[in-house]
Structure formats: structure tokens, C-alpha cells
Image 1 (cartoon, rainbow, N blue to C red):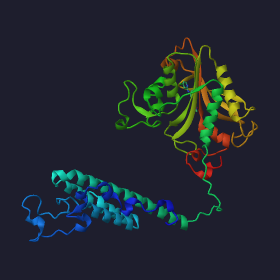
Image 2 (cartoon, rainbow, N blue to C red):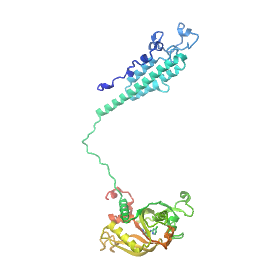
Image 3 (cartoon, protein in one colour):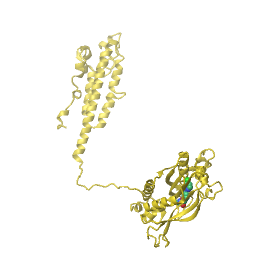
Image 4 (tube, rainbow, N blue to C red):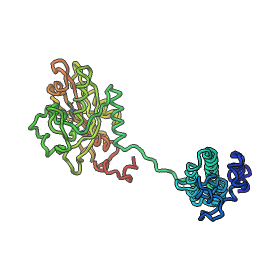
Length: 421
Ligand code: 2NL
């Protein structure tokens, strides 16, 4: 790495100056007049003429210069050895081995620092200070060498790896809203222009909100487990007092009941509630889960005329300005009177085609005047106020808007189908 002149070998790597400069008292550097690094000897049995062996007191059995020797650990030797190992490490693995050998928990420098504790008290401060400086210097050298090695790796990669900037880019596949999502958003937008708020609520409901409050007392056929999905008792836990069992809501009406109760009698009530609903139906034209948008308006003096006006406006918003609306008598437990609402066929404009089976009309929603029992359950007095309500199948609207003939296509998530919208 000769082309990086600013980053030559550091003082620590060269092993210069450290102990000698900062640990300058002769007693720290020399043993019997010689630099300690020359004095390091292997552990051996004391020889008869060994001076230390003659000493009766003090740590005579320990060779001077050895860890724990009376003159302290051989810091110069340790420093030189450690810096050499660092300098010679040519790859991160070898460098790590050097770190473990010298600075690891059982490494040579920590061992030597522990030996300082066994020195005569008056020697400990200087020996300890010298040891700490060696430890710091070795740590610094390790850090710097690690940086140098990783720079080397990067340089090697930069020299060998090539990026062909002329290759064509890979365009990520972009998602887009599902036809049901756009239909729901469009319905919400249309009803928002007519002053309706949007509310959502739980898909797991109690029998009270899903049936009782909607004028469908126990014994009503729709409450049969044949027609609705009930939760296992173990799963259901404890429904609130008097609310009955838990089930997957069969319509979004419970959200409107919750909304009315939350309004606490305030007028007007004007809300649409979109979301998933569940019924035990599964055939060519039915799915056990489908989407509904229900709406309710309660105020003083609300009549069937308001209902027809709002629905005609919504149908024109959804299917075009020329769309006409008609109502036929029908029955729902929660409205009285009730009506099926048809729009003029979006495909043939009313002349008759395959989609409308030649009738010129398409049935898209049910509606009616809110039943007095339902107003009461929602906390309103049917003697003072009246209201209309309606329910639209979002899936059916999406099929009409986009000319889709099978409902299951909306739920299968097949991209070959969905990418067309
Ligand atoms: C349908 C029929 C309908 C309602 C839904 C409703 C909600 C409350 C009170 C009274 Cl809180 N009614 N909703 C009313 C009439 C019909 O849906 O065939 N939908 C697809």
C-alpha cells in the first residue's frame, strides 16, 4: 500500500518510544544494568550461583524479569513481540489470533498485569503504569492494522470487480390497487360527497349487535349455525353480559348500531360502513367471505324519497350520469318497508343483454326505512325520528364496473387476472 503515504507505520507499530520514553526511571528499564528485554530468560531451576537463589527474603524463586519477578514483567519484550505479531499479520484471522494471544482474557499482557499485583508494593505503581501503556499501545496497533487490512481487502475488490454501467436496468414490478379496493374507495368518495362519514368495526361480533339489535331475535333462520360462522366457545372467551355468542359478522350493520349508540341520540346519523362479511355460502356465485358497504341516515322527517334520491345519485356517480334507478318491494327484517334497488344495465343501457338477462335492469342493492325496533336498539325514538338504510355488495359492483363474470376471481389473488385492472 505504498500509494497511501499518509498512512505509514505508526509509532506504536514500530515499537518505538513507548516504554522508554514514558517509563523513564532506570529501575523500570534495566535489570542489573541491562535493558530488561535482554534479560528475559526461560523459567529454569535456580542455579547455585544465581544471585536470586541466594536471597533468603523476597521472591527469590522467581527469575527477575519474569511475570511476577521482583522487577516486574518484561514489558519491553512483550511490547516488541506483540507489535511484531500485529505487523506480520497479513489477514484478519491472523490478526485476531495475535489479539487473543496478547490481549485476550488469558493473553500474555493481562497475565503480566496480574503478576504486577505480586510485586513488592513500592514497585507496583510504576510496573502497573508501564503495563497499561503497553496494553494501550498494542490495542492501538491492532486497531490500526485491522483498518489497514480491511482497506487492502476493499482495494483488492475494487481492482478486480467491475460494474457494467451500460447494462439495462431491472425495473421492479410495481403493485397497484385491487379492483375491490378501487371500487370501495370510489363508493366511499361518492357517499362522502353526499355528507356521509365512513366507519369501520369488528369482524368478530356478538349475537346482540349482529342479530338482536337488527330485529332478528333468536329463532330467526339467519341465526342458524347453518348460515353463520360461530366461534368455538374456547376461542370466543367471554362475550359481554347479554350479548350472546360470538360469530363472524354476517353484514356490516353492527357497525351502524355501534355508530348510533356512540352518537348518543345526536342527529343526524349519516354514515357508511364498508368491510368484509361472512356467510356459509360457497358456490359459483357466492363466496363465504365477501364485501359490503352499508349506509344509514337518521334524522327528523326522513322518507323513502330521500332514500331514492341518495341511491340514484350514488348510482350515477358509480356507473355514469345516464344511469336510472328503480325500486321493487322486498323484505328485510331490519327495514320496513323494504326494497330491492335496480340500476339500468351498465352494459346495454337498458335495451337488454346477456348480463342483465334481457331485462335491461341489474339488481345491485337492498334498502328500506329503518325498522322502529332497530332505531330503538340504536338509542333513537322512532316516534321522533326516521331513517333509511341500504346495503351494497362491493364485489358485485366491482364485477359490473370491470365486466368480471366470476366472483372467485376477485379472491384468488391470481396476478395474471389482477394485472388487467
Ligand atoms: C342487501 C340488503 C340491506 C340494510 C342492508 C340496515 C342497517 C341498519 C338498519 C337497517 Cl343499522 N338496515 N341495512 C338495510 C336494507 C338492506 O342490505 O341485499 N345488501 C347487499
